[in-house]
Amino acid sequence: MKPDKFVLKLRDFSSLWLLDRHDILFILLCLVFATIPVAPAPKSIAMVLLLVFWFFSGLFWTERSRWLQRDWLLPVLLMFCLPWAGLLWSADITTGLEDAKRSVYWLYGLVAATVSYRRYHPKIFVFVFLAGLLINVAVSILQYVKCIPMYKGVGYGLLNHITYALLLVAGLLFLAYLYREYASIAARFLICLGMLLLVWNLSIGVSRAGYLAFIAAVPWMTAVMFTRRQIVLIAICCVLAITVLVSSPVVQNRLVEIRSDIVQYQQGHGMTSIGLRFHMWKGAVEIWKENPVLGVGTGGYRRALTDVAVDPKYAIYSHPHNSLLYLAVSYGIVGVGIFVWLMYLVMRRGWRARTTFEGRVILVSLFVIGIGSLTDTQIMGHATGLLLGLVSGLPAGGDEQQHRKSSLCSS
Image 1 (tube, rainbow, N blue to C red):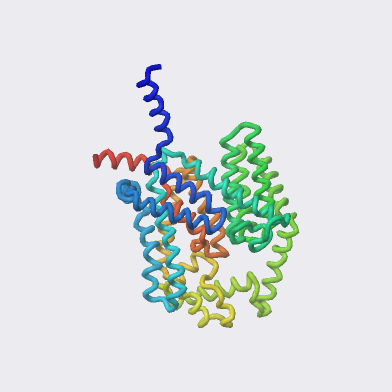
Image 2: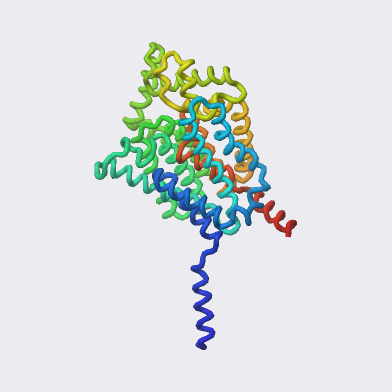
């Protein structure tokens, strides 16, 4: 072989290992997806790295057509600005600042939109998310067998128990879609094994929001895994899956507690999980009635609750454990309207692209966050709030084609 040809081949080989700005941005975005189901600390580090690189690499500007011309841009920017504006009429600036800081989650939708999904397959997001989730499952198993200390309780892993349970359900839905994608026996065996592991982890946890999300997701999962002709099999799998969950002693105890909590609330003893939520929801509605347009401002809920609660001792949380009520009480009909507008655009984009992995990531994320938002303020969650921000800007369907057309026109 001649020396010049040898050098040329070496250069061709070495070029495979060179990363450009787009590669690094995609890798950092994958790192964020991987750390969402792990723990807050690594997720925060990945978030900072991603946002800093997106800005200082110049991609936020050179690829601005990817996010600047989207129909969701205005509501996303309004959702980012609203918490900061809400400080102007808030009676609790300290709490308000902590809430306002989390509005940065919405900016990650712009970052997600900057990536070209014709160059990188969004299925990778699912794989890295599942990898991070399995790390936390492994931690949960080690905690269960008492090899490592508990973080908060059995089955929590390194996350809040409600958040972790919702992410487990998201993982189950992603595995269901992978079951459809891969027809080999070995692949499907591993996928089913992974699903059993996630269901077991859910069954030893105490999150009733997770139980509800799982029960609601079971028909979806089975419909994805099997064809319409297998309706009997789908029905049998639904019954079996729910039976397996409810057969757990932990789940049974948590379900029995529902009746006990409601009885105690009716008797005037509201310091229970459900009793506190009843007080918070009722108080939030009363506060919204008194401040229907702009609410009480960012972080003003707890102080306002002391004026409308039956007993001030129930005003112990800074949010009403419901995403829509949080928006209503903090920003009134204005905040609710902006959020509903944004979610409609995101849901429509996900539904139109439901046969693609971009669409599936959007729909699964909106589903678990929506279920969790019934009993907790998931839009403010460290993991679910970030996930919602990411999928709000995740391109799907014809977004890439629209970008290519606009790029051709501008050139």
